[in-house]
Length: 149
Image (cartoon, rainbow, N blue to C red; front, side):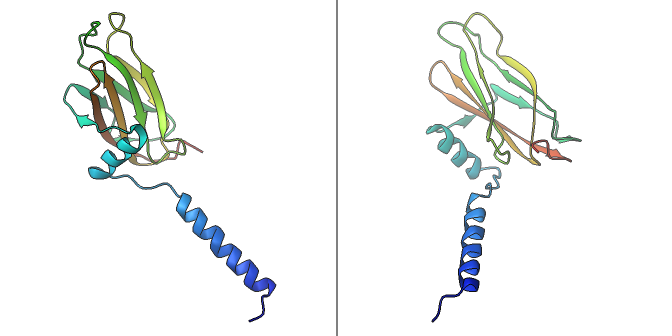
């Protein structure tokens, strides 16, 4: 068989297509896939808790400024406090969209802000407590436009 330019271009195009598909963001759904994402990002297992709440609208008109409110029931004492919160949007080009740190005795465990979302997806928040527990909260958000262009 003779190797021609057409064979080389076809082989190259197939290779580039396969590479592009392998780099395409994975669609994350509820359940085990979110737990796998959390374990892959942190190396630890998180548990859902009513002590930790991620409040976001179920539908929002634009992905550019989606409101987000995070609340953790914690006394914020030296021995029992929230250390940090990380927020992930798996469909965004940059998966980790926010990180917040807290000090005991100096603040309440609450954050209100806005984030950008690339499209409809689960937003996952992780709270690390002073005793080492990793709490998780998730919320499905449907946005009409891509806010990450």
